[in-house]
Length: 413
Image 1: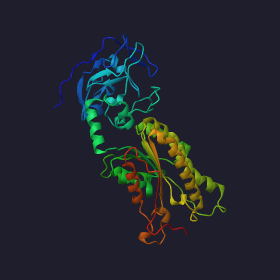
Image 2: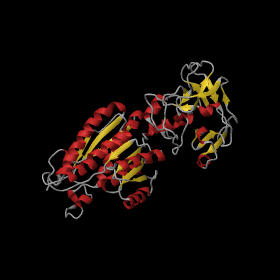
Image 3: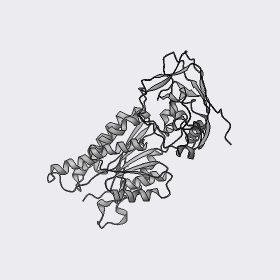
Image 4: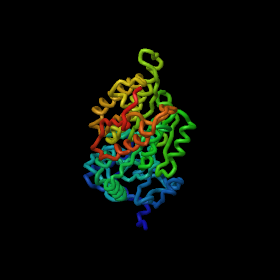
């Protein structure tokens, strides 16, 4: 049974609302504050998650006090000064218990009082309406109701989470639960779909991207069966700048901030290098290399700011040797491997791991119609299991490159 709380909040008498450089108005104190000073003891009404989802509660006032139980205000309640407290990714206010806000350091007159909303926010569907403007070096850019799960957020706010979230974090760390938001390109079929299936089964929240809506819808239906987190889907061609822009907009609107990029979309064109035309060459490089570069540019900065993430580039054994079956494909995978090696060096101190996964011959549409025995090609699920395992390693471990082939070797001719 949930314990009783104040019907109204108590606020430090010197608090006032004034203009903020972060967003609109903010909260300040007319007197200097010492570390540990109590600035607010929240009160209000107890709500269930169903109440919150149905709009029966003032969304931004909700603080999690138990699993699916929140304390906050009703939509018609008047605003109080603490309602104007802005989020900061490097805050000076924390939680002493589930309803008490305290200062984390000395705060002079004129310095805005800020808190990280993740200290009390447990609502997977919540996304802060505006991008964060706290202007701190560790700004996460987008603030969501899942941020308390991030290692960087836990590290910066240790000791200042609400008791309920402290218990959640302790259970998560004890159990090794590290489920993440994973974006999989080329996720509607073949290797990409197999990777998505394994990650959905592991409890990760997955967004698949594919060019064909019918194929994409069919893939989502298959992945959703028995899933803890129903996968999302975004139709688009990752080689198209317009479609990539639409993808990033979709992520913003749905609150899906990728913590893992599985860049799998690719194309294969037969023919020798000397017989190929510029259209084939640039088309191959645009899909197999350039799209990966642009997607890392789009989502990498937020991953770096959060101090957690993985970029998994699906390459090929064609990146290590001549590939007469499709030399344009081979050249693009050599280039992708070079991109992976250099990106790994750039992101290693940001908490973001980069892995180049190089499968050999795998049974996909590329081999459809070929008369081959079952033991000559690997299964797409082999790649899926490997990617899942990579994500189950400890945060301080990273697989830089992995090569695996059919037992009998690759088929080159």
